[in-house]
Length: 238
Image (cartoon, rainbow, N blue to C red):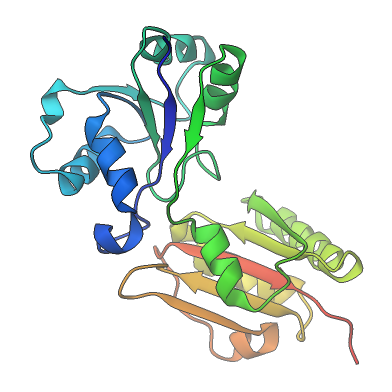
């Protein structure tokens, strides 16, 4: 009998595990002995917070990041083929959304290994929920281009799409480039376009606000090295 692959959510930051992670998820995570992880050190600390009695050294971790070769993925799922459950845990939030893991999940489907998504915090959806912007039609665009001119071009495209398709546009940036992204938003977008900046979601320093681009530009926040989600929506002028 094959094992299952559980998609285990992580916390989004320094917050109470009890407030962010359901009891059933913690129970399942404490029973698994094989993990596919983005950062082994992070997951070791996380599992110890879930259950201090876990023998961390008895667990086996497979490292999945941008340096992982595709040929190694087959080895990662071998424990499941041998009847063992495997947990996939990302650096923060839910696996496979703006995080590695989807190729493992696709391979599991090809091998008829059951995949079980577990409930937990997603910065993308929590930000959208709290933004006040269109949650019926939206697109997650991941990371925008690094080079400023290309990023400004992309922002203009997203703004137009948000208007003509009535579609909320969601994107993110590496925390140390947040301030540069903000400046490019001010350059690219119309003054009346709505921008939600959601930072440090679920932590004591959580801050989620939706303002017009012109309002943000008058008093720009310092977002350097702060985890953020950006949400953009241009509405037709009345």
